[in-house]
Length: 190
Image (tube, rainbow, N blue to C red):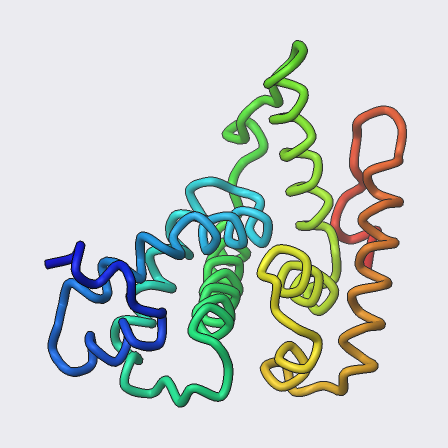
């Protein structure tokens, strides 16, 4: 049955799901799970938290499928749900901090280890950005969400969105250029 649904657009799949074709949502999940997880990983900086946020996002989308109005593309709607799920996970994490000794060590070596270290550095730097900058950068640069939609979803002007993305990118570049491999604490970056 799922094979018959693969050719449909996201919006058509969501419509079929709302009409009762349960397999349609499974197709949507497969199409978007990697992107949603990538956004969640960049937002949270932690694989476990990203998995939680990804699962929460799909559960919310499943439950709120009937509320999709079609004002934006399905992907944009889903990525906004994912970002909201990340905010929820981060709020929960803030209430229950992880002891430093429980944090994973960064990989060492070359090749794949260097790419992994670069991803860890990017995730750590994103975690240090102010929340409004991080949200705008992740929505636009990782989620591919246009400025207008970000403005609508966050309740600010397009100029503010562009400013947050620009400032967020500059702050990310500064954090990633710092020498010594040590990123400053979050308190010193806001």
